[in-house]
Length: 197
Image (cartoon, rainbow, N blue to C red):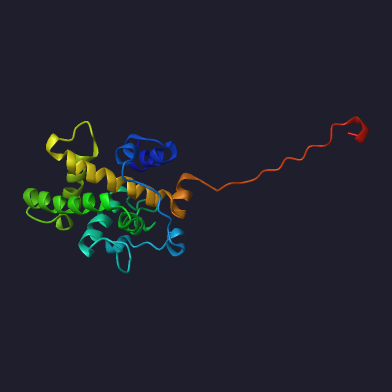
């Protein structure tokens, strides 16, 4: 099963292990009208979503979260997290979630420090293969080393928010084939004999 299919199954399936791990922090925040439609203009080429000023994140944190979102749901044959402006969604959510602010800001610092120890450069300066190597260590709860469990908690939160942002956007709805609530009316003739049925 491809990663994108697995993420789609997580969203369609509802309650999942991934969502359950982040359940203590995630909550619904209503998106402003200008963001709810999720712009379809791709910003994948820039490496970060086209965005004015983050509500919570520093520019560096926003760039790291954008790169993480792009690695989690990349633009391939289908739109990715950056196309759906998931980093903006994450920033908006986190701006109203004090517990998540500590976890994500601390997680970004950890990520840079870990990459500096492993590759002698910050996360954003690492090659895509190096970035993926780090995330692969955090992705599977069964194989993550004990010393990386706090970092996994950070990754799971970012992954959950990325999925929320993507699959609650217009592009995400299109990907899962959701067409909205539809009303189908079936006309039935009256079955009473006195009405000539």
